[in-house]
Image (cartoon, rainbow, N blue to C red; front, side, top):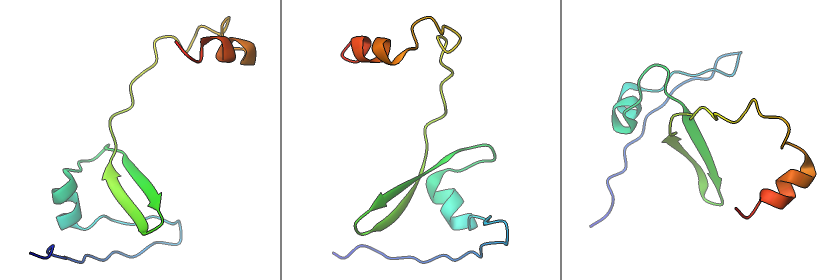
Length: 76
């Protein structure tokens, strides 16, 4: 059985903004404030709902943020 193909369109504004069509928002479960992820493949571009950003509790610790530290801790 072939996949059902549906098409939706939107315009891009002069500020490179667009409105996601209602059927796309519904299919992805997109709500205001959600993030999108654009996956570039050889076949085209796939738009997905991105996972929420998780706040890094260690972002303020700069004493271990040198390139040497990154290398030393890369495999942990």
